[in-house]
Image (cartoon, rainbow, N blue to C red; front, side):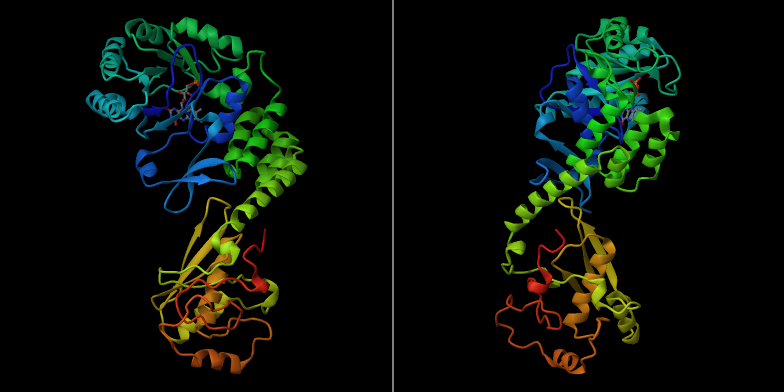
Length: 458
Ligand SMILES: Cc1cc2nc3c(=O)[nH]c(=O)nc-3n(C[C@H](O)[C@H](O)[C@H](O)COP(=O)(O)O)c2cc1C
């Protein structure tokens, strides 16, 4: 297990341990609020991170690491900047049986970065082997070692070995961070210091006790869970945490109370809004989403697309600014159905939809490929289905085909569209409007007419 960290010192620190799914931004901020000095993020797979783009999210004031499929893999913000540890790895305790590899990875990391590197291990079957491993680890030049005082195959219900951690702390010169004390040793704030003393460690890293109630880091003592969960939810909404992750973390906090009326509501929640409502935070959700939407609209108004300026498109994709409005179509017909039917009639391969979601606002955009030509709407949609319908409309309109719109039976319109040849190759390219029914002759970005404003839906 390897971690990169910022400039941190590991003496006398309260640390939120790495926890996959739990250690996302809302939990880290909450732990910091309650008094944690350092927070480890959820485990990030280094290969995945290498493929990510680093994006400044102006709406949320965060920095997002965005995967090629537009998923946000990691979100961080300025407040935690000097206190967050990026945990890279994905190898888990399996690496323990290969000390040569551990040494090689750590030495390479230490040489390759100016930031302190730490490493988290479990203990080996014999104390002698454990001590010889940690000595090798120390020689790589890492800043601190965190020791989870259990063996690889041991479960949380097995007792943690304070003696093994103590032996390591007494052997090494670098700081040792004691871990594994939740439940048996750590149930409230004062227990953290007792665990540190029992292990002679420099610092303590807490996982489960913080997952159950992050106010474990508060020196005044634990806060009531209801209050803690409300604070957690506020962060989750403010930073647009995915509702499934929010729900998972709240379930960990509720634990035995999952069968309570609130637990049942949480279990049934299928969105951040429903989670908020289950906790009496419906009004907060409304206010916060309105605020974020206003920020987003303001941000988009500064981009060329929203400002209505035609942008040159070099991608070869035919684009129009269209949205699928169900009310404008016959009840049983959709543009996708029309397109599929037309492809079948023309003996073409069936349309292929490639849809992405952008992290900024979670809106969707779809590109449909028909007869090796790609089509896309420049307007982003709230759902994958709507985005695909919009892409189908672009294809149908640019080919002059019926799309199922009410009252569209206008053979002359379709005829005119079909007749329009690919004229004037050197003529103006970006001026074609996206008024329904007009042919998009060239790959270009045509921006919305009054009917389909780029800001529609905000
Ligand atoms: C939900 C959960 C996720 C965890 N994920 C990780 C992880 O990604 N990387 C890691 O090194 N340890 C992980 N752990 C282990 C903890 O960091 C810690 O070593 C262990 O829970 C013992 O500490 P505790 O007694 O304070 O809970 C996880 C533990 C939990 C409960």
